Amino acid sequence: MKNVLVIGSTGQIGSELTMKIRNEIPGSTVVAGYIPGALLAVSLIPAEIADVRDSKALADIVRRYKIDTIYNLAALLSAVAEKKPLLAWDIQMNGLINILEIAKELGCAVFTPSSIGSFGPETPRKGTPQDTIQRPRSMYGVTKVATELLSDYYFHKFGVDTRSVRFPGLISNVTLPGGGTTDYAVEVYYSAVRGEEFVCPIGPGTYMDMMYMPDALNAAVAIMEADPSKLVHRNSFNIASMSFEPEELFSKIREYEPTLRVRYEVDPVRQAIANSWPDSMDDSCAREEWGWKPTFDLDTMTRDMLEKLRKRLLNA
Ligand code: SER
Image 1 (cartoon, rainbow, N blue to C red):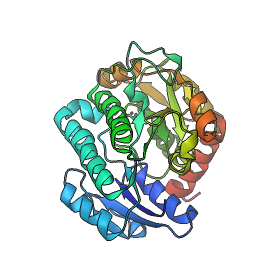
Image 2 (image 1 turned 45 degrees about the vertical axis):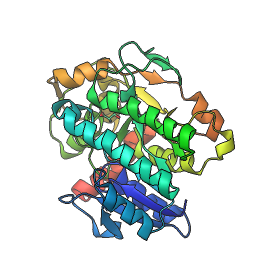
Image 3 (image 1 turned 90 degrees about the vertical axis):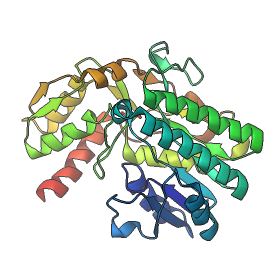
Image 4 (image 1 turned 180 degrees about the vertical axis):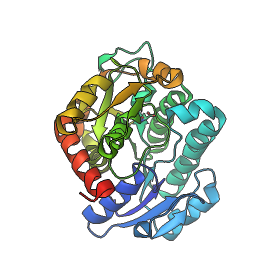
C-alpha cells in the first residue's frame, strides 16, 4: 500500500493507525478521513471529510489522492448500536457497500474490521474456531457478520482485494473507545491512575478476548501487506492475544496501583452482549496464513498502560 485513506481517523483505532502507516510505510501518503464535528488533531493532516454514506465525496477523495488502500473504520460500537440500530446499519452496511463499489471501480484494497461481536450464543465459547457458527443477537454483530460476507462476496465476484481481522476488545492509552462492551477494560486504567473509584458495568467471571492497541495496529497493517497467495481466508481472521475477566484485570492492575477501588453496577445491555461473545478465540489460521503473532500479554500491557497514562494524566 502506498496511498491510503483511513476512514474514521479520529476514532480509537484510526487515530493511531493513521500515524503508524505514515511512520512505517516509506513513501506512503495517508489521508485522514473524518466526519464534521469530530475533533481533528493537526497531526492527522492531510485530512478530508469522508462520510461513508456519501459515496460521491468518497470517490472524489479516492481519485484525487490515487488511493490504493482504504481502511474503513467507521462504525458504531456494540452498546451504542443497540440504542441506534438503524444508524448502525446505515453506517456499517450502506457505508460498506459504497466503499466496495468505489473499490471495484477504482481498484482499491479494502480493510473493514470484524470483531468478537460477530459471534453469538451458539458459537463455541472456548478456543472459538476460525470457521464456526456466527449467529449474533446484537445489531453490531449482525452488521459484522454481514460485513464479512459482503467483503468476501466482492472478492470472489469482482476480485476486490478485501481483507480483515476480527478484533477483540481493544485497549489503548491514546484515544478512548466510544460505547463498546469491552470499554471497561480501558476505563479502569484511567480510574486507577486518577485514584478514582471504578464502577464496572460487566460482572465478575465474564471472560472476553482483549488486545493491546500496538498488536491490533500491527495486525491491521500486516494483513494488508500479506502475500495474497498464502491467504486461504480473507474476511475475517480470528486474532487473539489475551483473555481475562474483570477480577483478573483488577488484580493485575493492583500489583502496580494497589489502591484501585472497584464497585460493580452491571449494565444489563452490555452484560447480555458480553455473555454471548467468545471467552477466547483460536487464531491459528492467522498465524499460519500471514504470520500473526502478538507481543503483549496482560502483564506487559498493564505496565505500559499505567506508565503512559501516569505520564499523560499526572505528568509523572
Ligand atoms: N470493542 C467492541 C465493542 O465492545 C467489540 O469489537 O463493541
